[in-house]
Length: 226
Image (cartoon, rainbow, N blue to C red; front, side, top):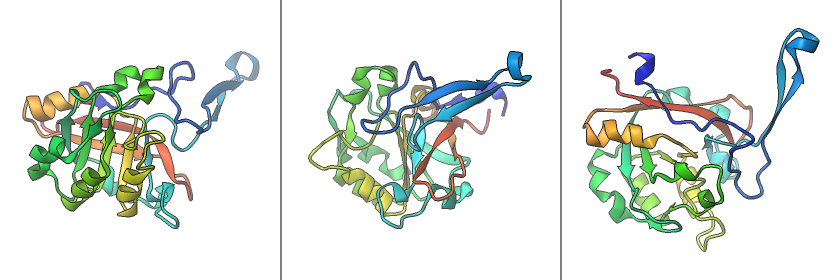
């Protein structure tokens, strides 16, 4: 594997181009020390555990759930992935099991299910808040296949202020699963997985934040034969 074969699935953390979930802490990045004045550069960061491309640990929605520092790294590194093409979905539409069923034979324990809606193109704009969202019953059926990690290129698998509340979060995180949000570049990974028919692997690496409910991550994917 060489560096050119790595597909970065992470949005840059840029205060001038970012979408924050309503009510979450804002993101700031400010110079605290400079080379010119202090001899070295240091920046001050302020952000939430769910800022940018990030992972939700069970404790995000479940009382006494597993925290992000308790998630074994071997469940997050070099995981086989399935990329589901959902780019036909419109703003505010629901992703149901019928949209996913044809991929179900590939779903199993240890596999990461990535829902590719193409919504990352709206990152940093008001349109990013009007994303396709996952049906709660579909989440139940995903878990029945053995999958425990679901990733999306949207703000959340749940509709903002929707009638099901945080139902998908409760289903997946309640089963000890993980949710990865705000991914990008899933098209490139899909082109390897579905279009070219090549195996893809992903890594979703969080910070080791003691007792926290999630973490910003560096997510990336690749084809192991390249």
